[in-house]
Image (cartoon, rainbow, N blue to C red; front, side, top):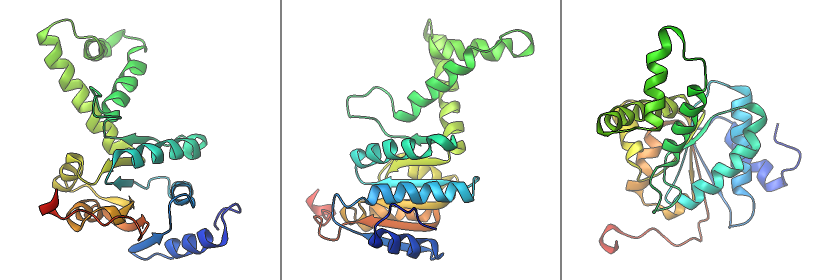
Length: 219
């Protein structure tokens, strides 16, 4: 059942999405709570199907950052992993995914280093604080492997429609139980198809009165 705090239009959208169609479209102007609706839908999916994998995609980073904050608030009691693969801004040195990997490895490195796992723990510490060029190469390998592990282990993954991660997941045969495309009206068909190919069930959210996407010749 939909949450009690949803207004009638959102309850109608909720009921439509949960019916089981492979594609749903949720339309509404800015500021009506579409992001909140999506967050609560995802919460419901993960409560009823804890093993579900969910992808959220959008044409721009800001939408994903807002969605990430909303989801982390809603999903915090459930302990689900939310991973955003994009940079926080264009000046950032590392993606949000890479920072999550560093945080994860930092927590692991604090464990007991005695016994047969001493060498792996040493590699983790070197990955976090490489001292020279040789350690830097090993550090990049450890961090890249951790990126991949987290990306494939996350309950919710956020990536822009043009992200190379989308292309990589298609090439690797990855599949998500649900794909949500935010601000779908701003994206053109070529930008939408990658994310939509990755999902069994797809929900496109947007405002039909938004500016139409630029044609390729106008970019």
